[in-house]
Length: 188
Image 1 (cartoon, helix red, strand yellow):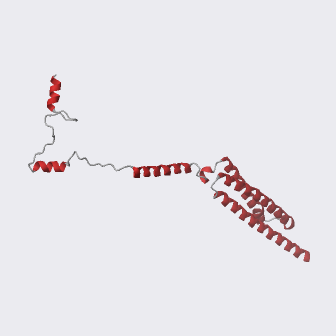
Image 2 (cartoon, rainbow, N blue to C red):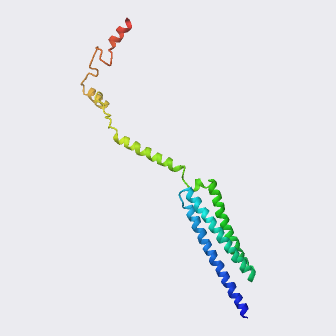
Image 3 (cartoon, rainbow, N blue to C red):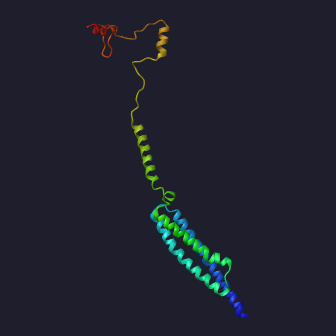
């Protein structure tokens, strides 16, 4: 009876060791996945994944060896098959696949805004430059001293005051020719 209880205690201790190692593996796997996804540069992304792949595969082989030792002593169960073999292998393969895909640049548009950042910076610089130019430009006076408001001209004509709209009647000015001078030129 003592050998049977010894065997049960040993298998229970081995199973606890397997589950503790699996928990450590899952924590390490999660840390490397989160670290890789949150990295801002591709070289950091690839180095975190490379380190994660190495460590996770080492932990996977340790977990598989522990699961095989338990299977030899007490026989295999479906839970141990899932937790001792499939979960660590799947997670390690997933990290390896992410490293392979990441090294070929397939995840760059999803994780890194490399193409967008220079364009955004250039747009921001152009906006600031235009804003400074607009502040430095002198204000242009849009009012014209030579022209009167149409309402004041109409009001002036209604009141019976006739103002000369053209100051040089019959004489040529610098910018305008009189009608008489144009007719004379055509006759010649």
